[in-house]
Amino acid sequence: MLRLLLFRARRDRIVVPIWVAATGLLAYAGAAGVQTEFPTDAGREAVLQVAIATPSLLALRGLPDGGTLGAYVYFQVFCYVAIMAGLMSIFLVTRHTRADEERGRLELVGATPVGRAAPLGATVLWGLVANLALGVLVALGFQGGGLAAAGSWAAGLAAAATGFAFVGLAAVVAQLAPTSRAANGISAAIVGAAFLLRAVGDATGTPDFDAITVTSAWPSWLSPIGWGQHVYAFTRADLSPLLLSAALAVVAVVVALVAQSRRDVGSSVLRERNGRAAGGPLLRSSLRLAWRLQWPGVVGWALGGLILGSLAGTLSGSLTSAADLSDQLQRVLELFIPGGKGQLVDLLVIAVVGIAGILAGAAGAQAIMRARGDEADGRAELLLAAPVHRSAWLLGYVLVGLVSAAAVALAAGLGAGLSFLGTEPERFWSSLGAGAAQLPAAFAFVAVTALVFAVLPRATIPAGWGLVAVGAFVGQFGALVQLPEAVRDISPYAHTPQLPGPDPDWGPAVVVVAVSVVLVALSVLALRRRQLTT
View (cartoon, rainbow, N blue to C red):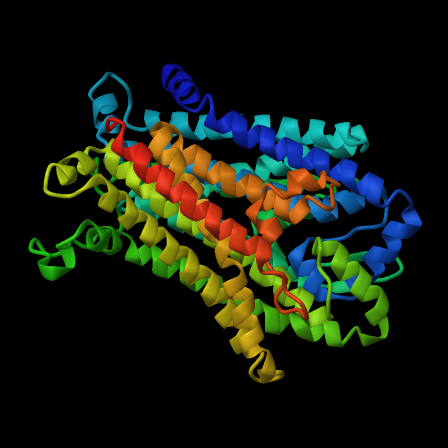
């Protein structure tokens, strides 16, 4: 067991430290930025008074509990720290379980004198170690940003417990899903569902304006992210909700072990549907093959974007109910949306569809990662042995990535537009335009991931997810943490036109598209000049 644990640590010696360091940096930057932006309790309390009167803001950010510096930072940052911990955990577990099983590695390990449960047990232990390290970095980040030590360590423990809960859930999904791609997709959807449950629970909670806090509704108590929020690390420091995270992780791991003991190596609880042996015209090109392999994932990502976009109309009612606070609410909402200017509902649509834009970038990048998986597993070598040109092969995956990103972004705009049909039907086309405005940034991540794949193939998957995470952080929090404008401009999301809005600036977006085209061309040239690697 110990050797398997050390082997997993060695394999992840680059990927996991990047996730841990990035999450700790998010905690530090959030604490330092808020302390600079809102140095007084009065200023923070004024913002929070408006926030708790506006459920849409609670859905986007978190659960306030007073106007102290630590409480305000926890309200702003913890949900996103928890998402980082969750994503790190599910990718870690899938890589060492279902992905290794696909590649035959677990069968080789099983041929040695180790117990059948040892590989899964070592993976769970490694997930626990990784999340404890993440928790330590989060605590040090908060503390380094000027927050109290006790609250910082409580926040770090909450982040670690949340991540470990997702370790258990991902272990169960790895037994259910037939492929690593499906396992990652289902597990990522679970993380998204946890965020949405928390968002609904916080938005429909009961506000207390005197105490500047909100008592969340029951949906928040169905989410590991919600449990972490209820620790209230810098005010009450109640660690009892983390017992739910620990219990969920333990129960899920037991279920995963039982499921593993009752199935054959290489099989799954959910069976994969086999396609026809003769694909006919659908398989007469590498592009059609890439599309056939990935279209279910594209549909899944698009449905997620549609559901997320539909929240815009649902949450907009809370803005009209706070009309007496409109001037102050305008200023506060612009704080939550860096660079945002315009009407209240417009800013809400920008915020919601902007989150979908991040999903679009992730969906597009994942399509390129599939090309790396095919190369590593030897399928690309077999395909390229036929009369298939390397350039056409890569461009097929790039095109699928672009379609995937466009499907998510436009579905989010469509969902937002449909959600307004009953109240403000004139917003349908502007909301659809907000989805279209996300396309340049999403396409940029397809191009960057393609270039990494062509130049440094072994770094494709960690670099692909890492670049999306860094771009999202800089785009969403760059202004809040007062990053220099030159640094913020690195993120493609910083150049997204503000739609709906009176005067959207499409110039930077055009530049982003032009740069993306150049990067794709460079990736095609680089792929033609390197050897295939496993």
